[in-house]
Length: 262
Ligand code: COA
Image (cartoon, rainbow, N blue to C red; front, side, top):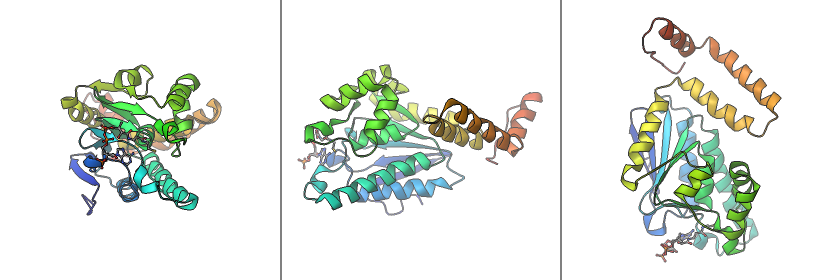
């Protein structure tokens, strides 16, 4: 699939790790319909690729993504606007339903839909130059891609309401303090740090990693009892997997495991 004639997306693979770079630098990677369709297509293709274990998503230039393309939807009627919003929701769902962990490597502005993408990713590494925000209030709107509810769940009601009602951009350090960023790096080390994190995860047993993504995502909004029942069911299914048997045997035999994703 690599590059698949995408216009707004560069696809590179290095071992188990696939790096996707948004390519609309002159417009701060603002997300138009074509970019959304390419991202959705790309994540759906990654879904079943056994040679891809972890994905990194980053932006070109000074932005990760400055949100949905305001110019594109400025002339829309309500039907067209909602069809545009639905394409965005399909794209966020493709990231969340992709069984492979997705690491956002945030190089600059992650605003509106760009921040909603970050909230759909599984881990976040940010450059010291990154800026995060949901500035839809400045347009007289509210976020349409899940940002309100996801920000609430990620940072709690007080910080979420301040972000949403002021539209203020947060620094990477503030994101770290709010626990929506895993690591902050210098701009020139961003991809190196994201790749090292991806590589560490790629060396683990893929079915266990994929299960952890699903269990955390599904458990977040379930009752504790239900979520723990999901955990137990997944563990029971994993026990006789080739990789679990290999991991247990390798520990007993005091050797490194070799995981094959089965
Ligand atoms: N949609 C469409 N175009 C956008 C865009 C967006 N969300 N964000 C930036 N751009 C375009 C600008 O219109 C400009 O295009 P031009 O050079 O053809 O005029 C180009 O990207 C560069 O942006 P510019 O505003 O000149 O850069 P800046 O460094 O002065 O400001 C921002 C950067 C991010 C503060 C500013 O671009 C901004 O506020 N963008 C909108 C953010 C937003 O509201 N996102 C939520 C959308 S729902």
